[in-house]
Image (tube, rainbow, N blue to C red; front, side, top):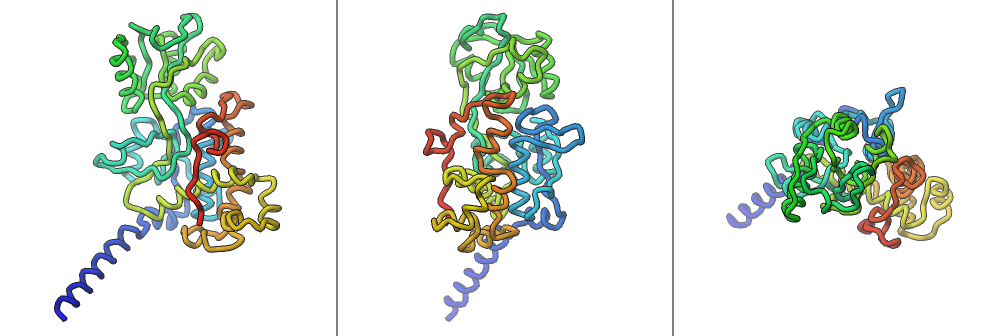
Length: 343
């Protein structure tokens, strides 16, 4: 009898601990506040996140945040955008000044395991570090850059990667370390450094802001793997699930051929159980996730479209960035985007 009572008490204690761990501490604060605070890299990150003349933010990372707000609140407008830098982003997240980072942050082991312990629930963009140089240098490969001066931001994976690359290839370089993205772009544009290094997509975005964009070329080498993801604090499994499955809904929609233009027609006519569950026509996916509405994914797709629509609208070949889908295509078309089954 004593053993049974002790076992029952231990089980109750363990259940309490699990429930507290899963209680949604950060999600509860977001709901009580009534807005999602989203840290974005700005205000000069074309394609990913920039405010317009009225101060309204737009871009790929911005729409990911608005999609998360739909899942939480059923309303894409319930987001407050907070500009952060590469140096201020993690302190801001740790201190609760922002709830999520949607600012091209790379998922790494140390960010999972260091003292602050962050989570990156789902990759939103696959990238790799690259190097941009003026065409006048007639450089076609990074291996021709021995002795170059390189503009780089501190406190980033970029800073470590460039040092690793030059050392591994027995090349010398002089870093020009500048924290502010606008300042580092101006330094490169004025000739203070020979090379501007960042993720490829970030360089494509910054090139559009140079005095003469066509006078600069991004070299073919990729120095690293940069899986970029929305970043949150560890300790809230409910928020982790919401961020992950919001991202997966966008990927699933593209794989299933569901777009902003046809989502309502498909929701009303499809007999495919996978489609019906995703769009909230049957099952309880929204309830399981803790979403504001059963048809949260349907509302996201109706508002923003699928992953491919968001990509093409802000980053694609018909935008100033001119990015090909490449790795950021769905797996059935040769890319890396692959969502777990929503069932």
